[in-house]
Amino acid sequence: MLQYHHCRSLESIIFGEVKSPPAYSGPDFKDAYLWLKKEVGFYPTFLAVGTTEEDIRMTGYQDNWRVKISDKKCRKRGEFPNMVLFSFEDVDGIFTDYDYWHLVLNASYKDYQMTDYEKRLIFKPSWQKSKWLRKANKNPHSVQLITKTLYLPGAERIWVRNRQTKKLLEFRGFRNVEVKRIRLE
Image (cartoon, rainbow, N blue to C red):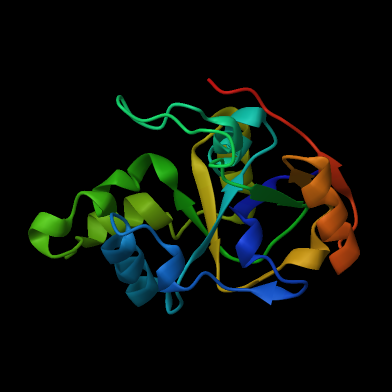
């Protein structure tokens, strides 16, 4: 069952193992990611956990087709991103509760000094993998996994936005590539 999903831009894809360098992060999240690096010992590569389309939406893959990007700005032809979704059966990493991730995102006012209680809400250290997967199943869009590296050719399914991207990835050696669109909300 494919339940771990990672989306990244076509430009950042190699046939091999990838990491998410700090430059790949948006400026609004960089400090939160650096806090997470300090907590777990590596800069995070995020995966959505779950089997539903709602879980996949957590990756941002649907933004491949988003025309309106703000109240005053719309994308024109040729300005759309080319994001690729990699889905895996199993990935080693550390689970986090996305429902509490806002505690970190909003912690700049206290210089990202998180309390032990807040850390327990996010990481739930007493939970086994089975409990995390049960939470993801019952509450889509609620569980993330962070990993140090991700071996992209190991994906059991790869979704791309168009046939040109499919051909390019297959030429690079990737298999199980499908052109798949998901609707915007």
